[in-house]
Length: 622
Image (cartoon, rainbow, N blue to C red; front, top):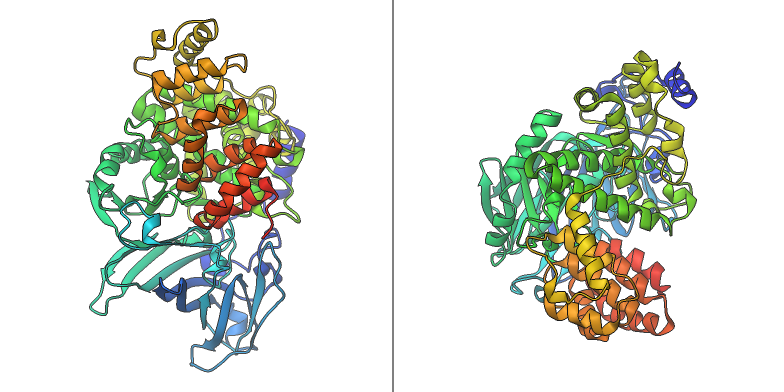
């Protein structure tokens, strides 16, 4: 017999889970709470962008043409409505395929999900064109002045659509449940190169850059960047885009990308997106990476010089299967994107860099998860949370990532690795280019696997893993010998050994993180200074190590790091680093005052994703 939660899910979904051809699927379900498109009307199937980038006005202006799926019953019948998501946009007009105006209205704006753009269609309308331009409230767009880039020569623009920010630069149905293909024509000032998450068709005689994405993707994966960019190949199907002064170092650091692609294909099936390139962005990018198909966006903080942080590339590459190929249907199913991806990332890293490296990274990830969960509300600790009344970013933490991966590792332990590889491969192949929700995964797992083996089914409590806070007692735990050596050296130091006597030969980033994070508060400020002089933590150019050191320095009031802390917060926009430092500063009145003074200067440099998080930490009002 199946565990009760699984049996119920299988009973409800076994008959319902049938693959429906792309053309015949109905409009979006009401399961996605973060889109106005759930109100009904037609569904978009293809997006054709035509935009001009005005760097002086910091505005994108043009039009989007939307191809619609027209149900057979409506082809010769009455007109209907099209409901789109729009936020921070000025809508200039809407026309049909005949070039004639269509009636449209923009509803009241919800601060979380924007406004509903409702268009009244003529009978048989299969296409509409929306003319519009972006504004300074278009949160997906990050416009950078030349001095905010590495080479300080040209301005830069990048977009960040996940989770629900694509609607702030393109009016469309911004739901991960609706997959679309797209084409784009982008005009930018002549010195700049434009790239997108699509096949790069190049620059035409008219000066416009053109792109084509033939595979259906969710809207949050439409991505654009423009700046002083050059390309360096790694293999026939992969390479690196970056500013000229950085591209060689980026190419060297990411030289194992092709090996990672081959490892992923061996584990999860063929890579189905043609190319896999990486764009290294300026430091204000709010994430470590973003898995835009064909063109991962990456933070320059991944370039540590020793390849110790390239698991980020393994993670974004793994999204080519989990997230891009099979997408979370709603944002409460985010673990289906990120938890599965972290599991796949770990498998790639193990195959390319060895078991010891993978074990060390898994142990540190669980350590960070347990630490973070102590400060999270119960609902935030759930893999399948209730997001009613909440923005998807309110749920952002390591829970969907690491707890999700631990869930899959528990399933691997039950099935055995060889069998679980077949389970995962079947999930990807059976849902390729589809969006799925948690119930789909539970149904698939039960119907195809657990239902056939009651003994294995009895070993996993799916309701506990998916719907309850905290970590279940059967969550896998790793013990890395390399980290055990770090702990021994840290204990020696805490007991009085000189910093220069510590055996740190060959340590990589993860080991230094373990060392710094575990330093007891009984270590005096004088001894912290000794460590700093021996290992150059305050002067480190490795952002992972520096962030941990600055958090420690803030907590212990190690003033020698104060200047570097202010510089770092002005230089880097990655939320992973900003959040812990600002959080630590905000714990004391004097720290909060200092944080707000720095933030007043740094805030215009940060992306809206990071601003939303830090505003809450500092209780910032504008």
